[in-house]
Length: 207
Image 1 (cartoon, one colour):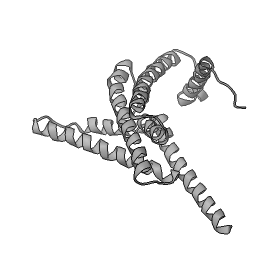
Image 2 (cartoon, rainbow, N blue to C red; image 1 turned 135 degrees about the horizontal axis):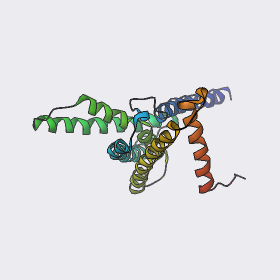
Image 3 (cartoon, one colour; image 1 turned 90 degrees about the vertical axis):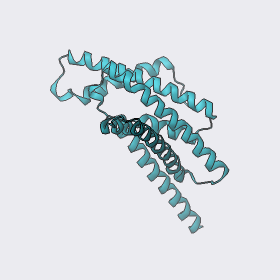
Image 4 (spheres, rainbow, N blue to C red; image 1 turned 45 degrees about the vertical axis):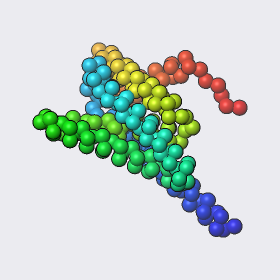
């Protein structure tokens, strides 16, 4: 009995630890505390980088589906050990693609911009691709459905960035109390907007 309790508590601890690390990684990127400077986003920049985000999300969806397939058919693992597998496959795929691009550009005599590839890396391991990776890995969707979901997530990202730009433009013209300037008023605005969208979508309380 004691052994079963210890094993259960150990599994619960490892699961909670994995969830905490994964969620913090996603939320840090979501709040714009990573390499991407969301405060300087403009419509042109959102559209220019939106297709890169979408491609990375599609790659993450494929890797998440592949990781789930490998775990389900060849190496059954407990839930708390599955995210590292998804992330490992995604990292290998990303590095392989970036390495191939670098090799082709070098053979063609084109200069390599470190800033560009640093940006691509920040996007690849940003909140959206990582979120798609986890959702696909733990989900039950087929490969095609996962890729369509990633495309929709990329489109939603572009729309969200355009919406945030519009919000910042309006806030710049408003007289905001000093204590609420910057991130606080932005979070309040986004929270109210989220409630409005949540109401439009509809919600049914769990019974």
